[in-house]
Amino acid sequence: MRTINPEHLEAVKRLLAETPYYSLLDMKVEEMGPGTCTISVNISDKHKNSYGGFCGGAYASLLDMGAYYALYCLLDEDQGYTTLDMSTHFLKAVSEGTVYCKGTVLRQGKTICLCESRVYDAEEHLLAECTAKMFVSPTVQPMSASVSFLEPGTVLPPKFLD
Image (cartoon, rainbow, N blue to C red; front, side, top):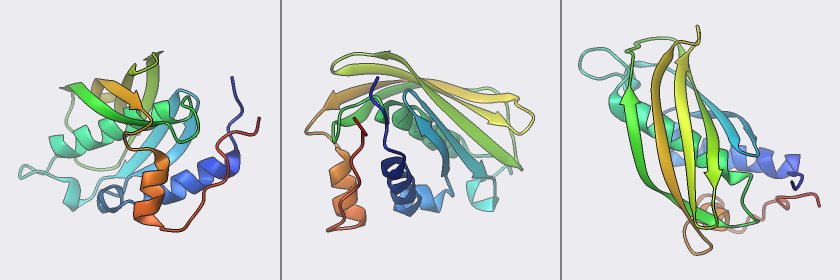
């Protein structure tokens, strides 16, 4: 397995924090590594539905991001990919505190990858889960496109050390 450049990961985490939608939802990448990603969200009123609970759409966004970025470190430099579909299960309501999404890669194929993610509260109760199918292609959403959108002219450090 190739060694991920820590400087690259820090730059990607910084970019993700600047992404308008992720910023809107206060999603914070805590960790990224080969086949894994952990994201946190401190629940506030903007995350709540009309019943005062964490909205299903916020759960789905968090689950998608966890599954999506779990795959990132396993792909070649600037290899692009996108979510094809998600099967999501909402298991327990929550209305306050911090929630954590842990994404993992179940199977990595050449063009189709299967990932999962799970959302937990601070007491590690399982709140929601999903499996997500990802389509991998050099022409679909490479990291360079994200950099061009968020910080035109910026060049990320190399993704791998070897």
